[in-house]
Amino acid sequence: MTKDLNMFPEARIPFGTWGSSYFPAWQSSPLAEVNIGQFAGEGMALIMSKRKVPIRVLDYLVVGSTVPWHYKFWNATVVASCTGHRMPGHHLEQACATGLQAIVAAGAQVQSGSSEAAGVLTFDRTSDSPVGVFPERRAYRRTEVISDVWDNFGFDPSTENAMIASAGNVARKYKVDRAEIDDMVAFRYQQYFQGKESGFIQRVAVPMEVLNMQGKSMGTIADDIGVKKISLQALHAMRELETGVTGGSQTHAADGMATMLVTNKEMAKQLSTRPEIDIRFVAKAEVRVHASCMPEAPAAAVQKLLSKTGLSMNDMAVVKDHNPFAVNDAVFAKVFGYDWHKMNNNGCPLVWGHPQGPTLTRVTIEALEEAADLGGGYVLIFGCAAGDVGIAAVFKVS
Image (cartoon, rainbow, N blue to C red; front, top):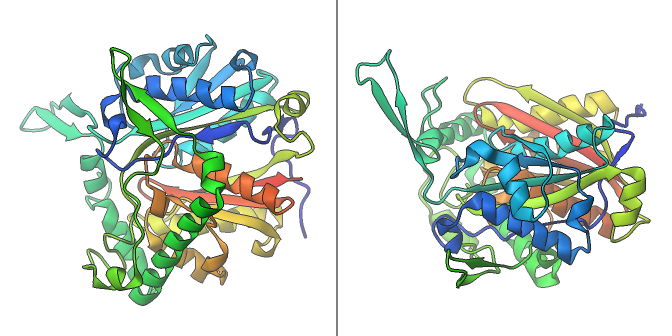
């Protein structure tokens, strides 16, 4: 029995008031050389201008990122200034769940009556990630050095395992077949390139010119640089790094930003590019699973979410996830008896990359666009976060 759930009755996502940069792979574009906070703020202003949204209507900004950037101490205040509009806000992060958490936080901001129009701006630059030096009096060395992206991916301090080990653990637990993984990856690439050929990706991702300190162009980011077509034969030939994991069946580090708005009902109709479309928050769930079993956490989060709402997978018009490993999708399909061919239409992070902070924001934007194309319905978004966390949310497009 479906429960009448409406997580934030007063909050709406105005259709079309969103967009992202393309996500060029690590060290492959001029984004490797910019202050990503400044780029994101300026990028948001550009996107809102293209969507015909006056940036001055925003009264709050929820910023989300995971990799330290120069002047991060000032977080939302300096990023807001880069949009050209001084507004209050705050910063949040939860590894790769950041993008969805920021959307939910903006919904809560509007639901509480604190804001009429809250911007969501998520971003990260994995290229040239900073190295931190930490005084550690309990250690013999007294000074510890950590590379923020690479050392964290390579070492979970609670398990002492690399993140890739969690994928191998889960692949073995669920007896995931390597042949199925390769078939899935080939299909995911096919979905992405179909999305490009149809023009769907171009509706979401906005080309952006990158300038140097002198204001001279360093190039335009107009593609998910680093993503190339790959054959099933090439996938079969790849060396297995962990059970079910090859270079092709895991995502790649990337740079980028993504932005959207959450407003009250009245303002949503004013700002939406299609005012007849109503987008509501339905529900959200989070879980933790066994240590070093991250790829099974999203399925567990969806189980909790469906139990809370009374909805089933058959009720979902669009299903889309953050899938750093193809194992994530294979396990989800096994747990629910769900056909993985039906999810992640038009692309997913497995293919277009993993800048962490904005990843689930872009996933959500693409899913809402797809739902509108289908005439509406429930939209299921889910993913994992560092360690063993799963997050899931349902939106309704009417």
